[in-house]
Length: 184
Ligand SMILES: [Zn+2]
Ligand SMILES: [Zn+2]
Image (cartoon, rainbow, N blue to C red; front, side):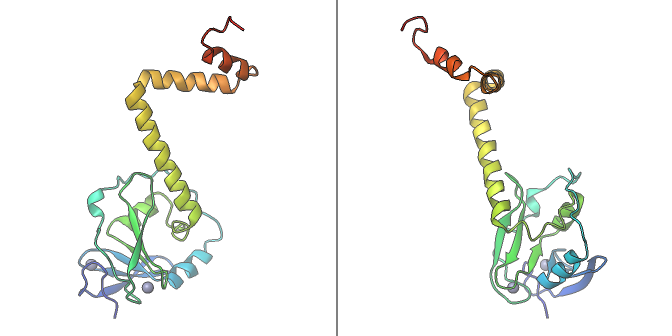
């Protein structure tokens, strides 16, 4: 008998998420548990990757159940993985049996963005590295905007692009940095 990782005592019921993808849902919190083998079997029938799209559902941070969860299959503590940069959207995954837990609404968000076929990618190094790089970029952009102001930040970005594409880039940089560019 599978118990809900969030509600603890509540039993999970059988559902069909998509044709060929059976899963287990809690009738109390609406969270969904997907066993790894069920997911892989469905994923292998796809044949091609679904192109990710923008999606219309706005992610609500209150959906996130932050407390520790135990895997519905094997009882191991599940690991939380952030999926989108600077967004409170985490998916829980069991490192023992690879089972996946989605809090209520999370599956709908993945479907909405055509990312429901990327579940196994979320937990890989490339996805997590890209996520961290995106977050760093967002934070630095925030710092530049705060310190320089929106207009000057826009200006300096334009100048940088112009410099980087200029065949005499080195001379231009030296000219800018020289205390007096007309002295040897
Ligand atoms: Zn529940
Ligand atoms: Zn497990």
